[in-house]
Amino acid sequence: MSELRNDWTKEEISEIYNRPLLELMYQAATVHRAHHNTGEVQVCTLLSIKTGGCPEDCAYCPQSARYQTGLEAEKLMEPSTVISAAAKARAAGSTRFCMGAAWRDARKNKDFENVLTMVRGITAMGMEVCCTLGMLTDEQAAQLKEAGLYAYNHNLDTSEDYYKDIITTRSYEDRLQTLETVRNHDISVCCGGIIGMGETHEDRISLLHTLSTLPEHPESVPVNALIPVQGTPMENMKRVSVWDMVRMIATARLTMPKAMVRLSAGRVHMSKEEQALCFMAGANSIFTGEKLLTTDNNDLGEDMEMFELLGLKPRESFKDAKEKHLPVTT
Image (cartoon, rainbow, N blue to C red):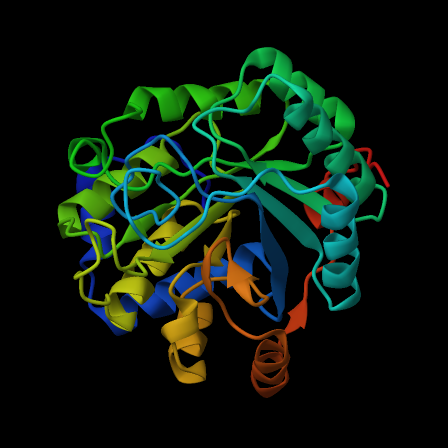
């Protein structure tokens, strides 16, 4: 059950996804134990280094320039400010620092040079650095790798069939091409999706099928629950249930056993008991801190209390690279 496979069929994933919930959780927990230390959770901090003014029309996103959400567009933050924020996150217990910029594709000017400076500075602290900057060229991916970038986030968001109902300004193939570009430069891939956007269970299964049949599974798979934001087309969507999150996380764990499955957006609305169910189902990574890009996130103090209660500890940085005996830049 815990073998690594890239040849899953949609029918197989559907059968897993639709198993009785308690049995699904048990099986996912068993596979989780086979591949991970169940007492460890990767603690990540996400900072919006360039907020708002994005030209894309992602229906869930308050950073789109097309929607009136009250969010003011800002310039790229200064490298020194970002590096200082990363140092505070490291001191608070984060081992991965993620930087997000509201761009359709990474800039080809001084802004990109400043991002490279940020990556170098934060990598030098011994933190894993992840960026999400939109689409990348080969040259940009090579420059990020040389600067020390550890991971790149580029979510597929939903199934290929439902994608066109959520986003029209960038194709599904564009997203897959960006993942290939990142992988070709030996950068760790972070890729997942969002549930609660009006998609069907079949769409969720299709998304997991796409992820689990990539040439290599993403090292990190964020599972996000939509946080409806006033002014976006999805402002009136209802919160997804914890059982939907558990089912999604458990199926991701069973189909991509070695991936870090990240309990991401939407966690702020979950009780400790609900989060514990997600950890039992195979989640082993979270974002902590006041903001998740522009939406509210869980307080670090509360997270540490939860870790104490559940007997969890933060996972060390670069653990995958160390276990594979790969060189680590610090």
